[in-house]
Amino acid sequence: MRKETYNLNIHDETKFLMKKYNVTANKSLGQNFLIDEEVILNTIKNANICKDDLVIEIGPGLGTLTNELVKNAGKVVCIELDKKMIKILQDRFLLFDNIEIINQDVLKVDLNELIDKYNMKSAKIVANLPYYITTPIIMKLLESRANFNSITVMVQKEVADRLCARTGTREAGAITYAVEYYSNAKKLFVVPNTSFIPSPNVESEVITLEVKKEKNKEIKDEGKLFKMIKYAFMQRRKTLINTLQNTEICKNKERIRQVLNKLNIDERIRGEALTLDDFIKIANLI
Image (tube, rainbow, N blue to C red; front, side, top):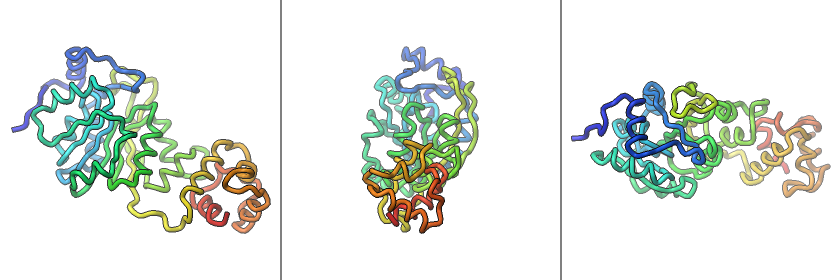
């Protein structure tokens, strides 16, 4: 029979664990401990977790979100970098038989191998991501093309705005194009800074990325596409022609002009004003 290790409300439980294990939030690892039960339950609900699911949680920390995941998922794999947290997680979930705890950097984990190991009906990512490494983790998850259905994560609100923006708008950044290319992004709900110990200076937001299972058949060269987007946003105030000339994308400025004219795109356009479809068309012609 499974049972809870602690029977306190989340705020008191967090304080208890921090005191018992002499833990303080590690700023270098971007740690802020979630103490809002409603946020946790809403995250689980929106991720549609069920017993058929393998859930990979990144940076579980004290295990507050983990505590609900193990009740709802078939299997939970926690990837935690902080060795102090590993001890807490091992003690806390000693009586649970559907959890594996891995002490590793998620950026070095082979997600395909991990998912294949359990061979469950579906795999999902659920996490409260550290602010300082959100973008590399999101890109790792998307570029891995691992066989998971969705990514439901809490991130800094400003980052959520960028991840879920429409390409071709002022709110978009280079990562917006990658997110749209690999997934369908949706904002779920805002999380106030009072939901954490210690309280960060910014609000957070929970978002979900529904991963596209098939590659985009329109693009001829993914590498060229994303290099082009990268160059465009490195100097986003310059025209696309000026950002791409003398790069590996195209040495010839006139060639870029010809491509834009053929697509009826203004020669003076900046990369930030182009949609993902626009970039794909330009990359294919170049």
